[in-house]
Length: 119
Image 1 (cartoon, rainbow, N blue to C red):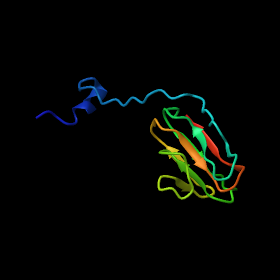
Image 2: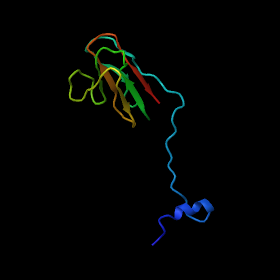
Image 3: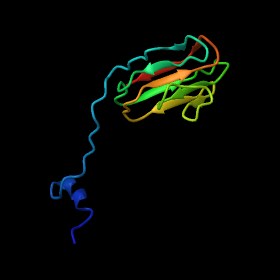
Image 4: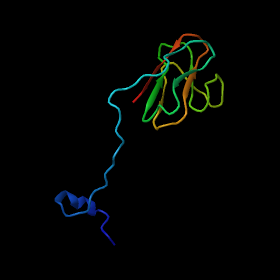
């Protein structure tokens, strides 16, 4: 049976190559969302277009918000929908893998601001 720790010998040049993890290159500058506030109460806005999240994205309901922000990565966001995720004031949601769908948000009050970035 081969030595399972043989790769450790590579430090002295006598073992097999150690496993190497390579991540895809990431953009060096974060990019912003298509919208930064819910313009009309109960009308969803698209934050990221379908296919635009290629690495990671964060959506944040600011701590100063007075109500939940509802986020959906499956369908247009709707308050109370089974697929819409409520973000309480100060909470964030991270999309940590590329997705092909659009991301939308909705709030009960017009002018509800949020923070979103993809990188």
